[in-house]
Length: 113
Image (cartoon, rainbow, N blue to C red):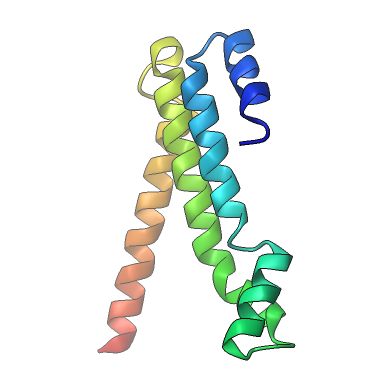
């Protein structure tokens, strides 16, 4: 919330809906909390995993990448749809992420059998 006025101004200056820029900044901040060192240290201390913070961050890195890229790609698609049309970098990245997740799930399911 600290940077919302700044993000709002950026949205206005580049000619897109500023509310989308602020919303995407909030999603990005929440995604960053997944791998934020002081949050991981605090959570590790609560559950008795002191000294294993690196393991926790490595385990959350792939979900973090998914959580950061998918909303960012969808936001890019939505924000720039009027200017660049449906086939823009956001839609291409969303399709790649969805295909990657489907392939990952299929591999995991085939290993489980």
